Image: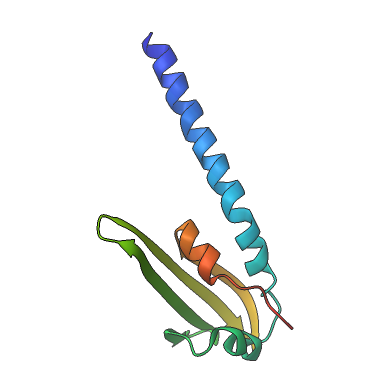
Length: 113
């Protein structure tokens, strides 16, 4: 019986991981449109970053943090999203995100140029 419990637990973890991957995929695809775009394009769409750091290798890391709480007392939703971009020679070469699905839905934007 214990063997089946372990198998069920593994199945649930795999299922939830694949569902999460499918839910975030459209937003990851939007973010991928930023690779190769200029930092000026990024600043036009998102505005000035919340944080920026020049690295010793000449690259720059910029971050945008967004959060919001919606709802009424006892029934609230908190949205959070942190987007980080690595810029080299004025081009975006890498991005990363942290947050929840609501934050991704609200704040992820595709490159427009």
